[in-house]
Length: 50
Image 1 (tube, one colour):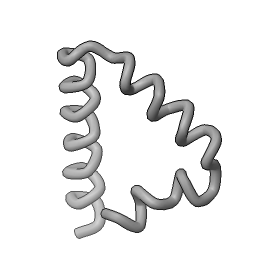
Image 2 (cartoon, rainbow, N blue to C red; image 1 turned 180 degrees about the horizontal axis):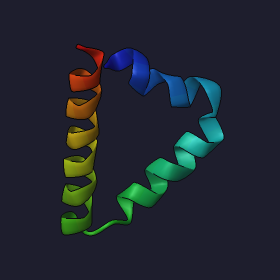
Image 3 (cartoon, rainbow, N blue to C red; image 1 turned 90 degrees about the vertical axis):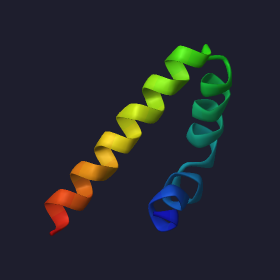
């Protein structure tokens, strides 16, 4: 998981920084939805890698 999380800052630090700044501006509900989608994508990746 940390390897995947580290790819964006390694390959595109400016885009990562801009994305992080946009996330700070989201409301709580929007941020929760992003977290839910991230979890679903992670579960899907785990399922597909089996």
